[in-house]
Length: 144
Ligand code: SF4
Image 1 (cartoon, protein in one colour):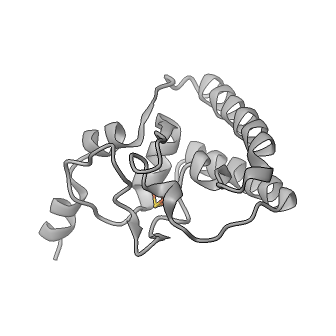
Image 2 (spheres, rainbow, N blue to C red):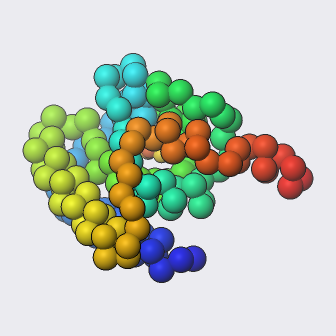
Image 3 (cartoon, protein in one colour):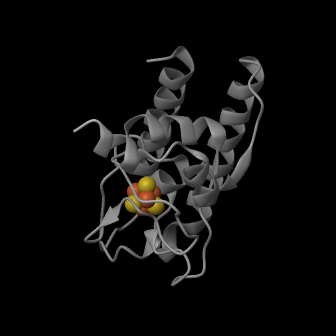
């Protein structure tokens, strides 16, 4: 695993701890991952995309902006490498301000990390990165 990937995962662990401490309620509605239906767009950075794509299961392309291809039966099938916003976002109304502050803080840390490592910073909706990646479903099929 690359050093940068390890650093991103370490940063995720810190963010996870802050979210846990805040204790938002999850009712497992799955709506956080059905973007269009619930009026949000999941933005991620290229650093997060690399971590996600290095360990996420195969998916079909093209990916649309409507929902995440890793959500299956209301559960995330890319839980370990999922991006920052997926780790921090909860629909619990009592947690919105705290969640926004955690997101800001760790997004800033990711940007600093990119700068320190001399990596360009890109920030775009999830589907943009998923469509740019080599077709993982096709690659998986060719390996069987
Ligand atoms: S990566 Fe997982 S948590 Fe994030 S939007 Fe997709 S299914 Fe949801």
